[in-house]
Length: 305
Image (cartoon, rainbow, N blue to C red; front, side, top):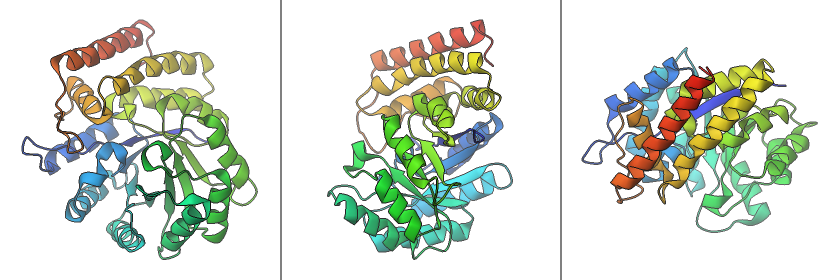
């Protein structure tokens, strides 16, 4: 089994005027690092990358490089719907000091199997650095299947990994199997928290998922337990994670719910988002508080931290 990792896809903290709050973002990153995350993914879906200007993205990348240097790995999402823009942003992110860039499939139009392969090859072939694929078909309408991953990696060896955000672990296992002979060190992360242990046991690298924003010390303990083959502890934490995942269903969009949960746990975050104008209701906030309180009680009763 590979060393299991739990990477946090950080939120983007905005102030009451909806502007990027750089200092608050840095405080959040430092807090997450101090509480045990294995790495930071900047500008993922949870970070509302699609609402940020290029200037904002570059400002946050520069700050994140400084915050993570010598501490944890930094993955930066650089995907757009245009090859040239994606390549340009990727080059800038790597030049600023990102460890790897992560490129999501184009979203809006369906590309088909061949179109997906050619898009990623067009991007990766122009980048002098490590590239990860980001598969989130429920949001983009485009799926990177195992055969596509194999074709891309065969043609572009600087494509070193994938975040596979699908509920079906069979999809993720198929990628691991397809790359076993051509790229045995290929990195495979799952994108949903509840798939973390299954991913590791299947030969993957772990998870990049949003609950690490809320309970980084718990996801750290989970990774440590899996790495130590402490199956009883792995199972107990799995049950807590499954309960915490109810936070995702409180509101139509999960990002403000994640942000509110972070604020309840003491991080300097307000549930202000650009991706929705709907604020959380008092009832929704109460549901989140109940979920967190129930999880806290289980964690304390079972001495999981």
